Length: 459
Image (cartoon, rainbow, N blue to C red; front, side, top):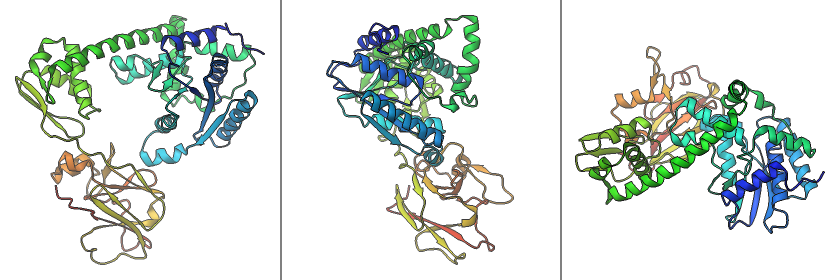
């Protein structure tokens, strides 16, 4: 059935695209198609809106390899649909379960990150259209509100960001389903969408229905509120940037300009100042402390270890450079293995028995190879890392281990960690091998981990 150009969903998408000028200077649109109702609706909407415009249309499907044969079936469905519609389709595969196990992310977080990495590889004169809708934005507002957020989080999902556009952001889920039914558009259903162990699904299936019992227009009202907050926050961000420009002198902040400003703008200017200087993970307690103590003597250590000092005249960083981030996680799936990790040279190998003595210039750690699950990984520290160093001791947190050895923040962020296949630390350098993996006289197969210096590692 031919889709009517004046269909309400088509009209809503056109209005959103025009309002945010989503296609200005764009030569091509890639629609992210999972095969679900939202993305199938978006694919047909964009096919109608781009007809005879000269803007090319393509599709991209990402198989996250989470649902086995079901995911493969979805991929084939998208390929077949695009072939029938004459739309070029690129299919990508990413092993989300394997990657998330290595990085410690949830599968949901990992999948999202990998998706957007793929999207960012699109040609510079193309945009990627994703199928977030009004319900998604309302659910995001509630999710952020529940876990704690500010104005940015209460703004929901923005209609566009960089080269990502969301033409259906003002269309509700019911209208999308009606559109698919009206025009006989097929789609697949992801069984995990009903899994209420996932926070967003719990909001979708339990919280939203209760709110719509209070007011049938709850989703629309929450999304509208998000839009208002997002627009007002944009104005405040602009004003805060102007304040920051006024207060900044040679990388420092003049307190008099900040003290004259409204507390809301002062806090936002402080956050912008931290972001501009590479501190992007500051929490509200850090921002509030700095804002409340502007014009007073203070010193605060920020996430990443950078120190910010203040007095009656100026606020400035003590150190000139941010702490270097640890390299990307490295998978260890074959032995022997050798690499450099920041200033450390690391080798991992298998032995038949425990050796005597230590390798020259290297610190040796020995684990029972039969107690480990491959692939292992080499990473920096992660939240929650701990080590059990002896039978009589309790498990000690990474922070406590560093405190006992008086290892400062600048060095501790680069300490190497060898992890088991499930992400549990086997070795945290320089603290030792976890007792649960440690080799002893009964071990038949030994994992030797040698850590030394690629260059001078004295701190």
